[in-house]
Image 1 (cartoon, helix red, strand yellow):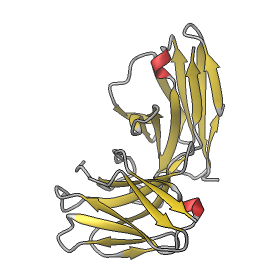
Image 2 (cartoon, one colour; image 1 turned 90 degrees about the horizontal axis):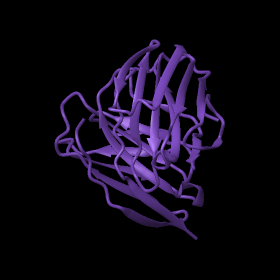
Image 3 (cartoon, chains in turn red, orange; image 1 turned 90 degrees about the vertical axis):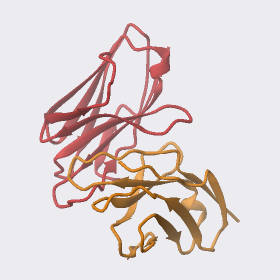
Image 4 (cartoon, each protein chain N blue to C red; image 1 turned 180 degrees about the vertical axis):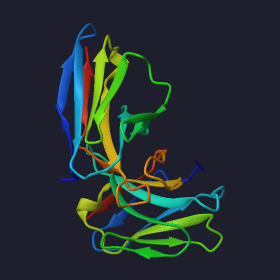
Length: 114
Length: 111
């Protein structure tokens, strides 16, 4: 248990569906991140939020829309996804007491796009 | 961020020390070396980090060469639960610094 929770843990959706992934951290951190991990590929950073402001968008397609209403919650809204978007989506947080890049990861959401 | 080079895979017998090497020859003076691991289908887990001095915590030890161009993560008594992919990452400080994950080293601990 890292203090970062993600829901749902598994999601199957069609290409025309709209769904949202939720991440919540109970660590008092200031920064939150979305990563994508496709099969047999390294983790790819998607978005970074620091104090609710987006500081990084790693050329992510607009069918992925992040939202950070406060420092404890992070959402990833999904619409008109493609089968190649099937992957493990990981949320992480960092900050507060540590000056270093110690990120705490959630368990991930396994997404399958049909 | 500086790039790192790690072996693709390694084996280690349970109870023995696992020594995982990492090369980071282009590391900058203000960049730290971080180690994470990812057990199958779970999120990555922070292990340890260092700047230039050797570091030790309850999970592992980190040995950084004097020129800082390479480092070794040591798991002193590997167990089957240490089977995972281990990532060596070089990054700066700051609460929203980026971590760039490579392909890491797949460590298999065997009986």
